[in-house]
Amino acid sequence: GTTQTDGQASRGAGRKGFDEVDILWISEGLSCDGDTVSMTASGQPSIEDVVMGLIPGLPKVNLHNKVLSPTMGGEEYLAPFRAAARGEAANPFILVIEGSIPNQNIIEGDGYWTSFGNDETTGEPLPLNWWLDHLGPHAWAVVAAGTCATYGGIHAMAGNPTGAMGLADYLGWDYRSAGGLPIVNVPGCPIQPENFMETLTWVLYHATGAAPPPPLDEMLRPQWLFGRTVHEGCDRAAYYEQADFAKDYNSPKCQVKVGCWGPVVNCNVPKRGWMNGIGGCPNVGGICIGCTMPGFPDAFMPFMDTPPGGGLSSVLIRPYGAFIRRMRGITNAVVNQEPKWRHNEDAVTTGYDP
Ligand code: SF4
Ligand code: SF4
Ligand code: SF4
Image (tube, helix red, strand yellow):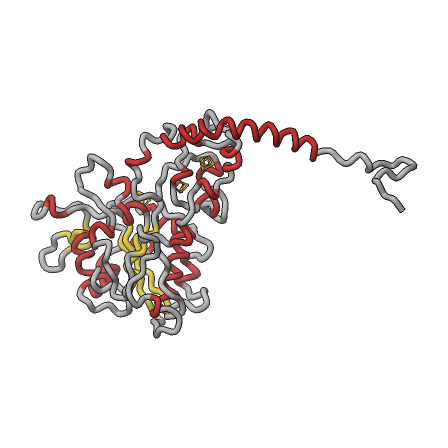
């Protein structure tokens, strides 16, 4: 179903919008910065085009991202974040969070799991959680970049000591930004570059008043990107249908028996590719391990074992698939021959009757 707040539909085309927006990107969740790095590979659109104002109709965008900042951190870099936390942001801002959110409650008063800048009075590190508490109420929109930020990801697996969670687990699944939007989740470990930039661009068009809010599913993912399964877009899907399964990784055939979870995973990467349309996990020999999913990684482990459902369905499809494959082989041989009337002999044997 679509998650939209009351009145959101009316905030679409025609709403008075903004012509300048800041992006405050914090990658100090429990994170590897992989989503920032991945995002720089986007071509349609590229972050450079967005920041340089080359995309028609977008607002002026000021990007504040530590990894990409020429200031490399420090007070100059922190200034817009501090102003926003005080409710004094120069422009409406989109808060982008990268990395999972640790649970400070379990160590309250005894340090911090991850921090961003220092408290100006005490000099003590400011936990990520402090920033979320102070920026969350003022952000015009909030976007979670990557599976750690959306659902917790790798740091939130069973047995972890930090109590890590996704942004919606922290701010609340019913959180609404100052602009009336739910958190916009773009999962992936890391994000597929264009998936993220396309979503960000939609939010920016919405900020101008030119577009309605992005349609999200119940896990707050963009519907148009995560509405289908890996299997439904996989180059190897025809092998599955013919029950032609790879026995090892050195094969172009369907990889379900060597650990691919594609049939039950929401992800468009096989359709879209990774960079410039090239790649896309199972297309190029990588089993799908469900890295976009709320249940990742626990639900998909141990990696490389045959998924339970995959074992059953591949057994059930075998009699049909093997029979159909044989029949198609026969028909394929037939249609690989030219009709017998194409010859250079004296008579026309096409059946032509003048
Ligand atoms: Fe790194 Fe993956 Fe987490 Fe992104 S989702 S921060 S790429 S571990
Ligand atoms: Fe489906 Fe994976 Fe096989 Fe592709 S490789 S057809 S996604 S099971
Ligand atoms: Fe992740 Fe699977 Fe999508 Fe690859 S195909 S990006 S492993 S969910």
